[in-house]
Length: 204
Image (cartoon, rainbow, N blue to C red; front, top):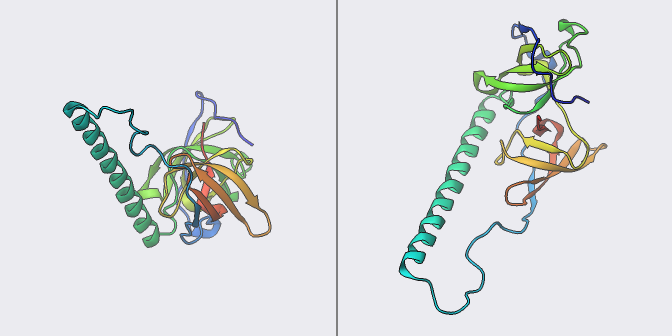
């Protein structure tokens, strides 16, 4: 179980991309939405008499419009990411997650060691990873990486489906079915039946 990688002194190693022999990513799953948590603020609470001034109403309308635009932009980004993953199941890597290196060819210094993804390349098919402990930076193909799950209550990032990119809290893991349940930090939506490859521990 890794803590955050040490900052300095690490060496940079470029790892050539290989065949998908260690692929950790399954076909896009996404899980189903089980329930909707208490919604984030819509309108204001019950009015206390005397209505809003014209300026207050304009400001409130502007805020509502801004929230709708932000929600629409987030939905469009998630849809675009999902389409990309459907075209290429290996495009699952994201910045800011913890992954495990599963490439035996890299030797004991890196095999089964964990690290944090610093940046993503090739549209999610590769990532620059800072290894925990040594601080070495590796450019790893997605087939050389595996997702990592924290203990229940830990923070994760959703990697596939309509909520790809969203941070969430791991609620439970079904060891028999190899699936997990999470609750999104934004909106309180609970997702059930996510495969292990659909989420990974949040870095930091």
